[in-house]
Amino acid sequence: MKVTVVDCSVSGHRETYYKQFCRTLLAMGHETSLIAPDGSGLDASIRFEPIRTRRLLALPAGNTLKKKWIVLCNALILCLNLAALHKQLRGIHPDRVFFACLDDMLPTCIPLWLFNRLLPYRWSGLLVQASLPKPRLGIVDARRCLRAKYCTGVGVLNEYAVDELKPFQSHILLFPDFADTSAPNTAYPLREQIRTQANGRNIIALLGSVHTRKGTDLFIQTAGQLPPDAYFFVIAGKSSLDESQEAALQRFAQTHENCLFSLERIPDESCFNALVEESTLLFAVYRNFKGSSNMLTKAALFGKPIIVSQGYCMGHRVDAYHTGMAIGETDPAACATAIEYLCIHPQVLSEARFDLYARDHSTGKLTECFHQLLNDLS
Image 1 (tube, rainbow, N blue to C red):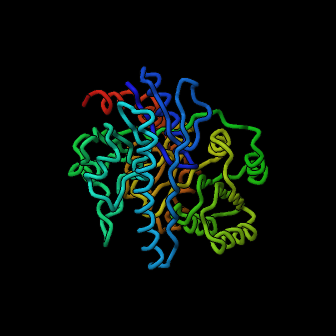
Image 2 (image 1 turned 135 degrees about the vertical axis):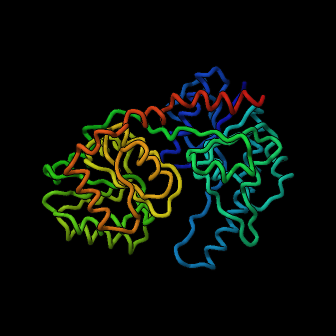
Image 3 (image 1 turned 90 degrees about the vertical axis):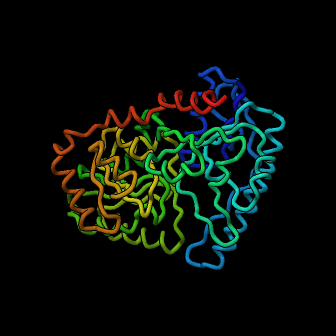
């Protein structure tokens, strides 16, 4: 079967996702092609074409009127992207199309009949964040496209979102939220800098893209509450903060000897894994985040306790696998207590099922997922 994987992302671990999807499909015996930003590191038999879509515009903070305008512009960009993809797929003519991130491809302002014409191939895909934007003035519910004529099923990373999607698509599969398992780069300079400055203290790390929704405010509030001679706080990753927010973070780091904030992109997954390995505890108390994050998988792979927001998917999983603690996302006192408890009493992790979580979210689970999406409904 000819299968084309499509993704329009340009950074982050989405690249890890779409390349692994290609490797899995090739290993299953499918004639595999990829339309995406980058095809490096893949088997030569995988046909690659750079994707010709436009990037969606970032939503501005605050300004409501400008935000509405950007939403409408993005709706138009989505339509143009589908038209561009239609031309690229016509040259490949696959039997199946798999979208590595459906979130960035589902249009919000075209009728379903036109969507079917632009995508006349049997397709499925992964909804990375299954809670899609709700309908609003001038913008229809993107989830209606899951009822499209040629849609054969949808994968999700968040098992708690399945019921919300069932009215739009009955064939829903839980995909593993896997992570890159590259060996840590022990020569990564930032790792050495953290180790030297921490000087034996517990390292509390917020890793990956840096944004207020990642809980940066709670992180620095918590850092100010714990003994600086026992805890060292690290933020590392590409910043999506505005200038004033970055300046505030750097001012905090400059006045607190137990903080190191590097707001530059982590070069690759081996460097990322080096920072995870060096950490004592991972911080992932994201704000109003209902989905899954493969930071849980990173924590499990390296046996690191993790603190997350309670009440959502990540909190439920941490409770179920006993891999850390779930707290209120605006409670620095609870966060400080959780950090101290996990660092001072590591025996509380005796019931942690890190290995089980890592197996449940491994790439080995992908074969069965693709088998069901591509073959069961043939």
